[in-house]
Image (cartoon, rainbow, N blue to C red):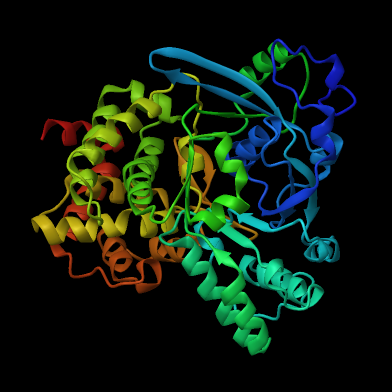
Length: 501
């Protein structure tokens, strides 16, 4: 039996939380750019929970911007999908299955752009959320009159301009816009890009005044490990337990947080926040952001390549390996926690770190290391480089685990073949896709340079990091040494020797 609205009555309510009939009649209030598992497993989760409690009473229209995949599976399931929450809280097993009905429809930006713009005329739709990965919040100087524009900021600006026209510049037509991309001050950055694009497109001072004064671009942070669809054997087990088939099913941890920078206005507009204490709306969310970005995400990013090279498949597997687990713990608590580029109360970093390590050990999650390597270079830049700079500023010495993680990143990025613009590395006789905008840069480097030269070129690249890191002589030497060790003796030996230091 396939999950669908018509089949809901046949589903055993003892196994799953189901939407009520009334929830399907709620008006559209949110425009969401992105169909990814994080948005669906966190933001849409909170909206669905609020709707079940009669609080927000609104649904989400999703815009699929990327070319991969299709939207037909959403249509076939009436935009329903199952969120399987698995974890441990206070020593007790947490297991919850929720059929989420937050999404009313999914539109393709490529094929249904006019339909997307039509929602600018909907007075009740006053919220925009997005997750287009770190590389999505980039300035691309382009016309917003394309159908559609290529970049997310241009798509957003096109929508807002149509809304301004539709409501004749009314203050009440302004929107609350919440990017969830994991970059510092994401709301502020998105606004600056949109404002520059407005000038580039000559949209006029009346529009830019409305844009500034009546739209709220909120910095925000999302924190939940959402691996998505589980491996086939686990998926088969879940289908048997639930009694139906769901092509959009995703698994996530119990822990959750959505921190949004705002005041009473945002609290009023985002009324779903009152349905769950894990949605926080505060004037300053810097502490939440830095802890998550550095302790959880930077640790993931600096470990994923090394773990793949060691033959570890999932974060859970890594935490079950004595050497990888020790590396992860020491990297997080002895290096990253000591150099977070933000003032923090005493003890908060280590306390949060121990909590994150418990989350990594969650026995119910299958979080693939290879998935964390998506846009590896931009993640290193955003999540890890600020920690490296701060570490040197404080201690003037090499963070050794950081150096090993960086060496593994450089080797993981070594493509051995290119096919139709896609780049592939090789590990133990198997190819893996290098899904990174800098893959071509590394491909050319590795074709013509020695390993030591590659390291030097990488640290010289301002395009990669936004700054020239070539003056970190000792760190560069440490990375060269670790890279040589991995190439000659393997990642496992390099990891073992690191733990013996």
